[in-house]
Each structure stands twice: as structure tokens, then as C-alpha cells.
Length: 324
Image (cartoon, rainbow, N blue to C red):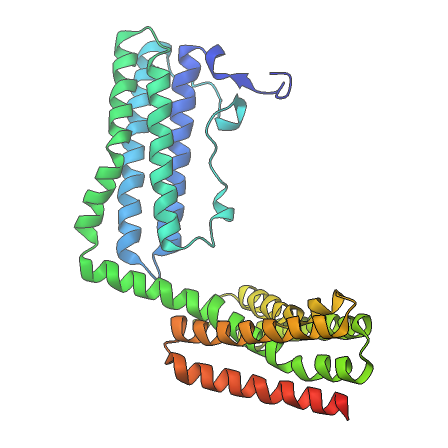
């Protein structure tokens, strides 16, 4: 209690305050469901209707709670919200959920229903009025069945074909926004930095200098690729999603691709560092081929031939230039 002096303990709430807390919670949940619906409506209109239906359910609960409060305590409802009560289950702000995937939104909604059920079960144990206790118990049962209700709504609005189409659309958007820019960055970082890093390595045989060059090349390439990707397309017409997300994905993966074979040069022994760097290059190139096969549907052996052959040629060029 001393850590949250501005919060009330749930056990200390009066029956009127418990009802007020339930009313404000139902209002918040309805708003969250409607926010989900508005966010999903352009791309997933059928799932948006599911969340519209769930918001209507929460409105019904709120109206029942207000009616109970009016009968027992009158028209004035005390102002008490989730963040006024210590230990009360939180809700993430809607602006933190704007980037959630379709499946993650459905999981969040299921978690909301479980939390609400638990609250009503606890609240029912703390009231003495028979009618209020019955109402809270009924709402606990309703919330427990809300997931089933959501499934009923999904069955009404989401046929298997519609659900499959929405899942394909969500997967495609994930690939366009995150995977494709990240893969381009990983390929650029892994392949384009091979020549300068290994040229410096074999020219100087100084591991610390090689690491510094690799670090500079990787970070510089990451910044360049990130800005290029973000500035090249705002996503409005192409449908490739947020330029900020694409820029972050491309820039970070470019830097990771270069740093992978630069970090071994923190080892002071030249040949130990170089052999380890070659092993990492081999892993990076095969990882790129796997990602192309997994997400871009490129035949694995064709992707492996292209990436490994290209990377091997760049690596060989760097070694020959540095050795000369």
C-alpha cells in the first residue's frame, strides 16, 4: 500500500464504488472493441463486425450495471477507474495496440474477457445485497461465455473462406512491411560488406582495425538502407505499409548482416577470427536462402545457388584484393 499511496485497495471499496468501477470498465472495454473494429474495417470488414458485436455486448452489461446503481444508490455515479485501484487488471492504451496483428488482436480480446470474468467473480463475493450479487454473478457467467459469444459472432460473420482470405491478407501485409525490407537489408548487409571487411583483414591482418572497418561499414550501410527504404515509398499506393516500419526493418537487418562477420574480429588472433567469420558468413547466406524460400516462395536450391554463389564471389573478391 505504501508503494501506491494514490490508489485504493479493492478490498476497501464500497459496494457503490464496486458498481462504479464495473461501469467504467465496461465503458472502456466497449471503446477498445470499437477501436479494434475501426482499425480493422478497411482491410478486415468481417472481423470488424465481430468486434462491433462484442462492443454491443459490453454496452448491454454497462446498462444493466447503471440500472442496478440507480435502484440502490441513485443517479450520481462516483468517478472511479482502473488506475484508481491497486492491483486491478490493466488495459493497454489503444495507441500501443495499433501495430498488433489480426491474431494478436483476437488474443488480446480473449484476455480482456478472462480478466473481466475474474473481476466479476471477486466482486460478487464482496457485496451483500442479493440483487447486486446476482447481477455480478450473472455478468461473471456472461464474461466467461463471452469468448463463446465471440466465436458465435465469428461464425456469423466469418465463413472459413472469409477467415482464410483475411489471414492471407494479414500474412501478405506482414511480408510486405517487415519481411521484404528486412530481407533486402540482410542481403545487402551480409553481402556488400564482405569485400571491404575481408579486404582490410587480409591487407592489414590487424583484427582491431578490421573490426572498426566492419562496424563502420555495417552501421553506415544500415543507416543508408533504412533512410532509403523509408523515403522510397510512403506505402499509400503500393500497400507496403508504414515507411517507418519498413525503414526500421531494412536498416536494422542491414546492420545485423554486416556485424555478423565483423564481430569475430574482436578476437585478437587473426586466423581464429577469420575462420569464425567465414563460418558466420556461411550461416548468414543459408539463412537468407531459407527466408527467401519460407516467405518469398523462392525454390530453396535456386535461392541458395543465387545467394551462396553471389556471396562467395564477393568474399573471394575481398580476399584477393586484400591479399594483393
